[in-house]
Image (tube, rainbow, N blue to C red; front, side, top):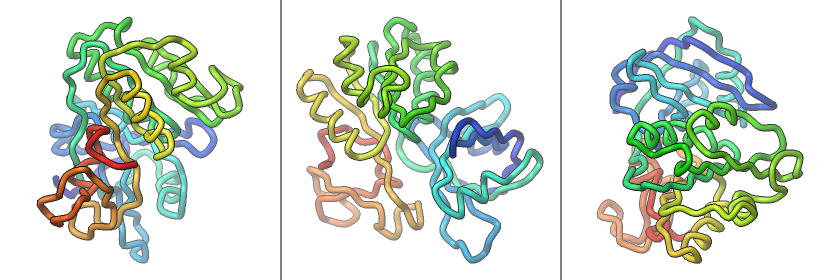
Length: 258
């Protein structure tokens, strides 16, 4: 990973409290892939800790990353005020991403876990997975975002909490409603969703890779603030846990306890 000052080349307000930011950072973009994240630093010296933001898209030719995030506090609210031409300090890429060995993948994203599914879908498409065999199920609170970008390369199904779009309920409800089939699940979203996906994968007898969301402090594996329980003993801590920031954020579902 590397820390540098990146230029913001574009910032858009997508919907509600969700924003899309493109940053130019060629050396980080050159190494980045689906499932990883970067840490962004505010300009306020009182806010020492960086904010982890998942990578939504990687444009290696332009040397840029797209970060789609939700304003959840003072740090991300500050980020939402930045304009084209502003700069931001960034550390990355961080963590282990998805392993792309599936021929008939099912991607499930919920809430702010939806953005990292876009880069994953693009990488799977680039590996030769057809639109018909690349299934994406997106779970929203109410208003949708990024849907049209997914539709270009994948078969899309939608669920929402209110039922205003797609199936009323969860991504699992949508999977059952539409009879979705595949050979592996790739997921990112809140823990209750991931817990349901782990059970669903077990029921269907297919593997699942899940990306865990967690509050982080250092973001580089030193502080142990973002550990999760695992089935194996961690070499770093010698107990049954792993650091989500550097050992993850992507794990096989059967490796972690949810």
